[in-house]
Image (cartoon, rainbow, N blue to C red; front, side):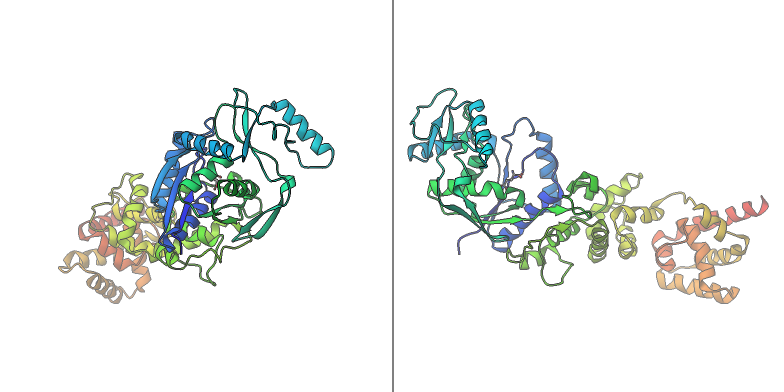
Length: 469
Ligand code: GLU
């Protein structure tokens, strides 16, 4: 088996979007699965639309997803001599020729072909003229006139193109710059790429590329064209459906492993399995199970999957990605010894890291701000007695641990004849400001004795003041 070499060649004309990330992922996974190589190439020849900011954004997104590359990044704008050399090769072997037809003339030929029911194409005027190079000359590929070009696609099956519908396309502009298809093929050949998985918006380019491979006398790579990602209305995914940039999902509190899992499942399956770790995917990813139907991007499913990945992640793994969300509220959780315990209490109840950060805030806040409803319903005069008893007993605790805390609550229940919930609820509001939180014994333990006592006293003072007013 030859060494598999895949590639991801984004055009840096914007951020990395969800569809592009899925293409990158398929290529990366296949390279990893086959112990091959993954090449990164920046297709920046459209200098009017390419920006360094987009290049940086693409790197940032790939790094966040953990899609590392083994070769590159190559930049097409730095490879013009290589393209030039290959164009010359095609000229020398009779597979290309100079053409001096003006754009207006070419347009006329296209219109004429259209008018007679054919495909708009160049009519071959300069094909046999053997013209020399010149300032206004372009180089055209001498494409086969008859027969067919067959794309054997691992996803779509065979697609047959009639050669008489294709034309002698330009491979080099009059300013010496290569055209898109030429550059892609030369790159893939010289970079040793033998497996090309890309969006099916490129299917129409592929017969031209196949003809170029043949003219260069090079073996064809394996092609697989994957269907586009659609929105819920089955239109191609776009901004109108919500965020399409990969890093926007990071900023909303998604884990990279969720995105990886979700994107791979948008176009590939492995039985009914929905949840995959990256390592599992590297074990089982294959090209045979890439689907022919377009995947539909569904935010609800993505959220549910994120909840599963957050739950499955070890608490220690979540500290770093969670930190920025709390930093925004002025809380630094990194290095705080209670952080892993805090995360452990919230892992099973957070759909996003943003949600987790909001739920975690009370653990760290100096001043608890009561939610209005919670304070009105729960911090009432009836709550005073249990709060006083809990405070006194916790204060007296020498072993301030979860089991001892639990024993305190039980003792207060016995003493007051109140149900555990009636005691836990005011304590919960006192400690967190809310009526919903992780387990009361857990949070009481994690917040720590001094802070718990201070919060309980503040709640009692609040009730007393409210009672007077
Ligand atoms: N640069 C092209 C794009 O961003 C990819 C070309 C290819 O995969 O061959 O769509």
